[in-house]
Length: 561
Image (tube, rainbow, N blue to C red; front, side, top):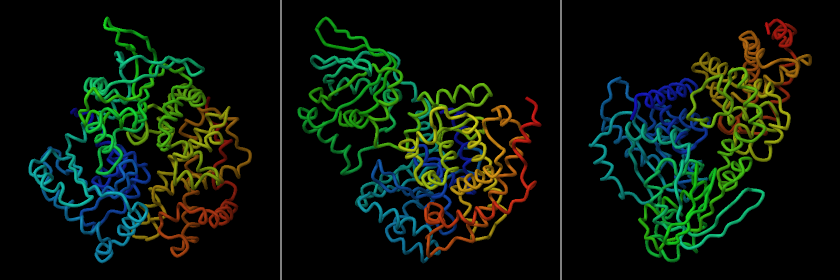
């Protein structure tokens, strides 16, 4: 554990609290869901914002499809600067929430219909999912809570419990950050011979690998073995697929090979070798398992005998195909496709252009683990901002950003896409988030302020783009990235966004009807609401008089090159 790691976590939580207008405990819950369960930032913040008075020990509820479980989180962010053990009442709050989750009507009776609606929605959509109750705390480990956790386990059917203290959270986060590089150099031994193939993709070796060999690699490189895998071990939930893998490996190791899909390893270089006894091996450099984390981890957990074998593909792939191999071997994880897209030629070109002006574009470590910085452009977020400027993709940008990197990707990032267009979307989106927060703060006590939740940032971006398009003289083709980075340009752009935020909120209040659209959250994700809003937004934009917003083209002319 290092102070630097904890400081990074604390800084990230502080930023989330500010963006979502929530407490640090709520922000810790959101941060945890984002980093350890890959929940989208906007979704996590919206779910955390549901928390409030009479929450009955429920700080955050979210659905983890990978684990097939609904997580109920109580979070503890200590107020004292001196680390102390987590207070026992924090665990008591976890156990007291069980009855309210089992019967959300009790929450309605206690004045929390919003939280009850969220729980009903999650349980109705996922009737077969288990419930996982957890306490996450940046307080030190409490032996008293550990004992209470042991006593609680196994007491409720289809319910699971966990406790993560400061030490666990910092260690886990550190593993996420450091587990990016892969294994530098090692040798993989096969059981019997292997088949070698070669094609446009590069070279490959296919054969059987014993469980003992995978266990060795896992023990030696616990952090690096799965560096290329976007889908880490999901745990052995009762009745889940991983529990079945473990059972097969333990009870029937001899048939494991036939019942399992095997693993895929991607490497920079591969060199066939063999020892004096004739064992076929491959010396592999800079490699990781990109598909088969579940299989490997289950074999380790089962302590499977060497009789258990798996089919293994080792691919020395061409650089241009390596990211596609990762993507297609993990196609069930669309939400993380952007981490693969960041290495394609389009993004490499954009990265080079932004580097010239001192802006970091699409770094490998991004998303929830990357602190917010206007000069660090996250690919997942900028794609949402680009999509938000287009009516056909606005709702998709809000509701399912992972899908933006599939079919719409070519429209959002066409060949020859200009860095200026990407940068404009990035600047608008970030400024929109700031203006949204300012407007939200000014409306304290107004029930309609919930129309300015974090996802309204994309609506404000949408309106801003329409206002700029009204200035037909402005074109990103005629300005430079350096001009756009200038304080004067950003200041002028902020005035456009300010008008957009007011136009959006005014039109949204005028259009909102709970009977038609449901909750505020559902409303901002509704195509029907967008259809109603478009004409109102257009009318309000048409009323903007000349001089009310700066002429961006004229502003660029005044900026010294």
